Amino acid sequence: MGEMSEEEREERVEEALQAFYERLQEAGLKSTKQRDVIVERFFWLDKHISADELLEDVRQHQPRIGYATVYRTLKLLVEQDFAVPKDFGDGQTRYDPIHNQDPQHDHLICIDCRKIMEFNDQQLNDRIQAIVADLSYTVRRKKIELYAECDDESCPHKAS
Image (cartoon, rainbow, N blue to C red; front, top):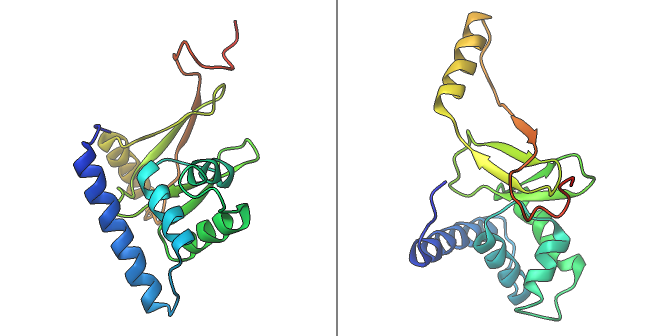
């Protein structure tokens, strides 16, 4: 995934926020200042994030926001199809922003530091489709999670 400029990121966040507010209106729900901050930070950070991690970030912008508000907002994002809850086996639910995201993406998870990378490999996707077609099936959804050790020297849990 290529790095995006500050402008591109702002544009993407603005687009996601606009779509989210439209969805809220359609559902007859109102937006609140606290919810706005949480949703904006969620899309700005654009990573698999736990409620605790999001709360920590949000409190730098609005110190009085509580855990319950963050959790309810994440739940709303999931209900409105703007986030997907993920469990990568460490007992903590992380939320993946999915507005205008490639639905084909897969995950690479470091078993030491728990860093999560997204990747999309067209050859792998084509091969999966071919295997499934050979077996007379049709893919409805797929989930590939590769657990590996990262090469990051600063990984806090790397075995010495």
